[in-house]
Amino acid sequence: ANLGPGCEYRAGSRNGGGSAAAMGATYDQATVDAICARLRGVVQSAFQKHLYATAIFYADKLLSLSRCEPDDLYTLAECFFKNREYRRLLHVLQKNSEAVNADDRLKLLVAQSLFECRDWDECLRYLEDHTCCDGTAQDSKMASVFAMLRGRVYEATENQENALTWYQRAVQLDPYCHEALERLVGSHLLTLDREVALLRGLRFHEDDEWLRHLYAARLSAATATSGPVQSAEAAASCLFAASESPGGAALSTSPAAFVATSPLAATMGSSAPSAASPDVGADFLASGNMGAAWGQKRQRRRRQAMSGDNPWAEEYPAPFLPAALATNGHTLAAQSTRYFYEGDYESCYNVSKQVLEQDPFHLATLPVHVASLVMLDMKSVVFYVAHQLVNAYPATAIAWFTVGCYYYMVRKYEQARRFFHKALGFDHSFAPAWIAFGHAFAHHDESDQAFAAYRTACRLFPGSHLPWLFIGMEHLRTNSLQLAHQCLECARTLMPTDPLIFNELGVAAFQQQDYGRACDLLLQALRLFGGPHEAACANLGHAFLKCNAYDRALGAFRQAHRLEPRRASVLSGIAFSLQLQDRPDEAIEYYHRALAIQRDDAFSVEMLNYAVQEAADRPCLTDEFEPFL
Image 1 (cartoon, rainbow, N blue to C red):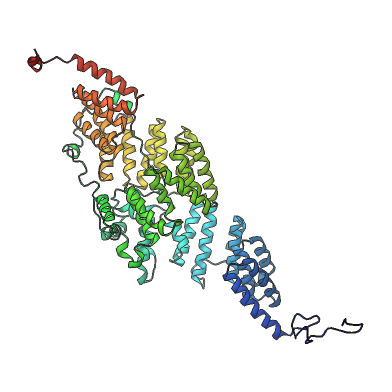
Image 2 (tube, helix red, strand yellow; image 1 turned 45 degrees about the vertical axis):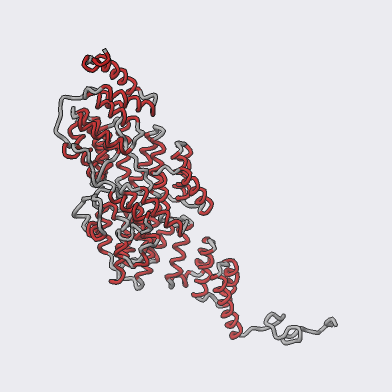
């Protein structure tokens, strides 16, 4: 029956059952506390299931019922942060400023939200006014987080010096702060000596020394010896003695830097050789066994891989880690990076491929994996990887960088520039994209834009020698020899063991007609390479020609030919060396082989005509034809 006038609905009736939802019900404090307890469980359950909208709904009601309890305020703020509602989070915490000032967790959420909103000035001001990052902080780990966040703000505003200061402060407060260490070690914000000193000073627990070696593996390429076999102990001792002993033969650069050399132009062999003939490199080339140990390390890795063994199980840093971490993704990523720096692109590809088979989106491995694919000219694989990354991580720099690499490989440099620029929009401090951006401009002869990209890389990564190297190469290409020499010397100061720098210095000396010094520099480059290198051997051949050392020039060109059999400029270099040794018949054969590869090689065409004329003018030995007379 309907309720008549004057009747009321009472709590505890048959339909209401004593429910707290009944109209006119009253809630005492015990009931409210019980509701809050249940809501905390609901919020926690929704949060763990990543149902952030649900968690926010109930956390908001919980905050009202509990009258802004600090823990409930933090719960709601954390839900806002996870749901990327940064402005709403800042508004709620601004209304509860007293609770925020008393809780470092809430201060951290405020600073992180300002950072995510890209409000750099306000974020920095808040950190300076409300946080303590010195040794007097009660919680050193929280102070380390605040210091690391300051470093990120300074880095975002391109204030590298302050960024380094605060990253180092973060590591001093908490050596386990991976975000700060990752930025300091292997990211080219510090020079190699400062990186090694930083690693030496880390105060890990005595049982966690393996962490020092795991980070040090990112630097081992810069300090690895050039011999064919190197033990893990030698790598470790060499690494931690790097500041005293700068020996080594590998690069210390970002893996996706397209390690490209600039061989001397073929026309350099067209000039008449000079009268000087210094005795340069006789022992290095005389026997034809230059670099007899070259390739032993990679051959050993290949044999072990074919037999089913892990060739990297005995290489640094694996022997210094717990056995279960020897095949961890970060360990293998560091080893694949070292193989890339050593020029062993196949081993680099195989190791990084193994990591990606276990974790297809291991972001720490992807840059060196893409770099190895570029160096191995595996266009179809780069195309596939680019599609996978764009579908999975469309808002990351590595995805669009990989797309740019594909267009770079197919020589569509304008499209490559567009995608490299897009990658930098997502991560302004992504070093490989800046270097590749400059390369794409350089291939279109747009030197000003290439210089701008390289200089930006110099400013953002003051510990890397690569930008200076490529600036020097671009000055060489535009025949600005004095500027090229200055930039290359800057690169050599940062990395005195990079063979590419000595190769380019040799090219600069050649163009300045200092042929003896060019030979010395190119021989030093080959020693640092640890064996034959196609571009360095070809350049050395041209330098020997200028020194009238025709036998050694021929030996250098033949070494380059073994490494790159279908290089027309190398074949023409062999032919020209033979022609200068008065062996026109053999020279003619090599000129024809060069023209079969590159028909428009003007130097080979011209010199072939001379060689044919010389062969025709040679006196005929009648004894050879007596049987036919």
